[in-house]
Length: 126
Image (cartoon, rainbow, N blue to C red; front, side, top):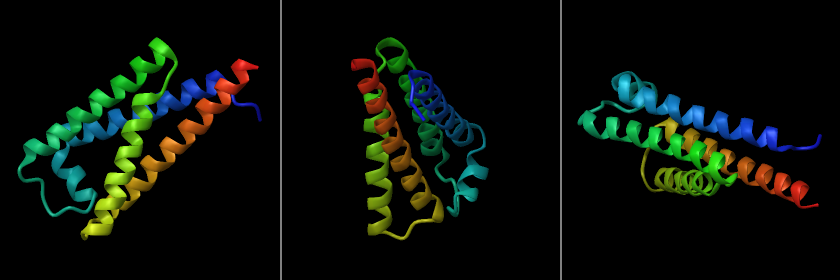
């Protein structure tokens, strides 16, 4: 199957949608989201709301960067940093299942985005 810019655009939209959904859960259903993720509580809740707002900023940034320049640098930096932070943190301290899961998912999103973007760039170059 040939990977096209349409595939890349759909991938970026889906990753941004994921970030918007996570942000919404953290901002508007913080207690539920934290309990579902395996944490004992959401106190102080301000920092959970802040994490939700941060997810909104990143999602908007992914879409804006891709639309303006066709690049995915912010997405790759954010997802790679999240992967290292989440997996590294899990190795250093006891964490709920969601930390490992999120780390693996963020790493997968970074890797797939990198590979798709590289394939599209090669196709467009020649």
